[in-house]
Amino acid sequence: MTRPRVFVAVAACAAAGCATAQTVRIQCVPREVAIYVDGRLIEGNEAALSTDRAHKIYAKGAGFEPELVVVEPEVGEDGRPAFRDEDLCVRLVPIGMNRELEVEVEREGGAPAD
Image (cartoon, rainbow, N blue to C red; front, top):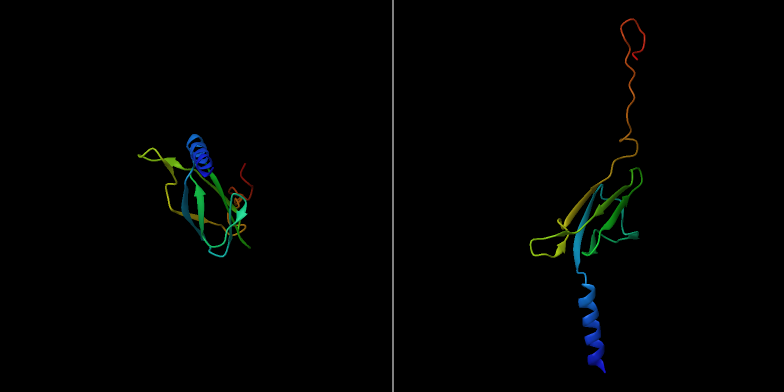
C-alpha cells in the first residue's frame, strides 16, 4: 500500500510545481532589531524563503522607524525562480531623521517670501 501513496504524493508535487526554498541572510543596520518574515519573528538572521512567491521582511527596533521590504524571486537563466541576493541588507533610520524640514526665507527688509 505504500507505493500508491508515494506515487500520489510525487504526482501531486509534480502537478503543483513544488517550490524550493532558498536560505537568505538578512542583515540589519543597526543589528539590535527584531526581524519578521511574513509576520513571523525569526531567531538569528537567516530565513528559508520559498522561491514560488514574494516575501515581506519587516524590521523594527527601539528608537528607529520600522522598515518593510518585499523581496520577490526572479527567474534565472536556468528557468528556475530564485532570490537575486543571498544577503539582504535592511537599513533603519532613527526616529525623526526622515522628516522634512520646513524653512521660511525672508526677503530683504524682513518680509517673508511668498
